[in-house]
Image (cartoon, rainbow, N blue to C red; front, side, top):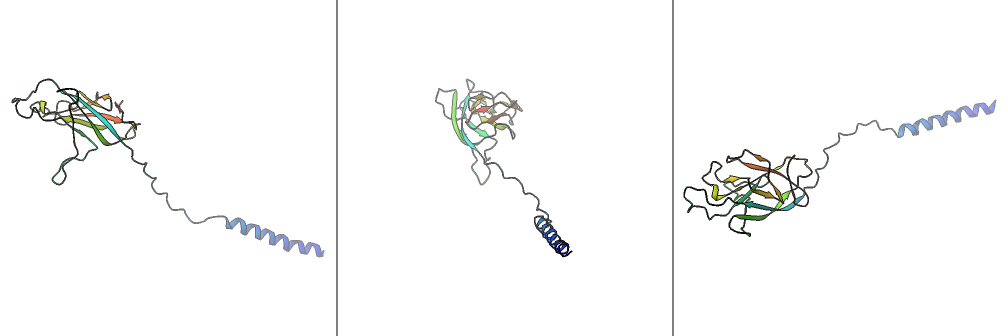
Length: 174
């Protein structure tokens, strides 16, 4: 009988110790809400821009502005305002009078498409007196890809849509 009396307290003690150890591993405090995930690191590349200017200056007075350079603009570029001269790239003529090209640095990569395509266009002084006011995305190539998707053609808001990959290659939106 004496042995049975000793077992009961030992068993109870072991049971209490086991329960205490099990409860000590439980966390009754609410976890804080998960914060936003980190933004992926921005990637930037340099792209080649090429533009073929239509032959002949189409301005009412061809002696005005027809010798000016073609200017490239992209939607990622900061526009001109009273305190900032604006981001723009003046294109050069390496192949002759009607072919313009240049390199644009710090272009955000947006391919594979996980964001909106870039809007791109040029200001062509030969087209200043047209309904578009000289703005066009026609005959424009970005990173080796000819612009085929044009938004608001023939207007001063005309822009071509393009994606750019990690190698600086242009990709037409589907």
